[in-house]
View (tube, rainbow, N blue to C red):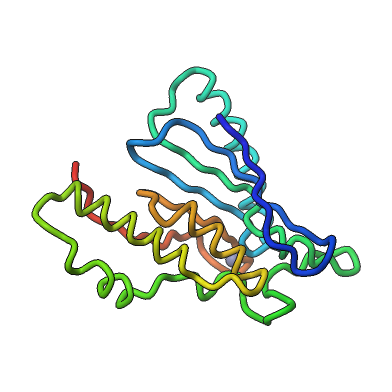
Length: 187
Ligand SMILES: [Zn+2]
C-alpha cells in the first residue's frame, strides 16, 4: 500500500487544497478506482470509504489483493472547505458557480477523432491505445480554475480504470448504480 498527497494549484496565496490517494496492489492487471465526496456534503460515501480503507489494508497485509485499487475517500477538498455557520455546503464551486459533479466528461467525438485511425485487429493493443489516448486527452484539459484542477487530477487517476465507483447519496432517492460497461479483452 502507498499513500500520496496531491497538491492542487492554490486558488489564492497560502490556501492550498490536497487530495489524499491510497493505492493498493500492483499495476499491470485490472484497475479499480473508488472516490467519495465529490459532492462534499454527501457524508455516507466518505464514511463508507473509511471502512473500506481498513478492510483493504487488512487484505493488503494478507497479500490478497490481485488488482490495482485506488481509493480517494475525500475527493473534493475544495468543497469541504465551504463551511458556513457549522454546515458544509460543498455542491457547487463558489468561484465559477459550477456543480462539482458536472462537466467532467471527455467529449466522445474528440476521443474518436484523435484515436480512430490508430486501432487495428489486436484487442489488447486497442485497449491500451484507448486508455493511453484518454489519459492524453485529460492531460490537455484546462486547469485555469481550482475546480478544473480538481477534475483534472481525479480524471488523471480514474480515466484508465476498468471499474470506477463514484459514491454519492441523496435524501429522496432509491439506491441505484449508473453502470457503463466496456468490453474487455478477456471477457
Ligand atoms: Zn452527489
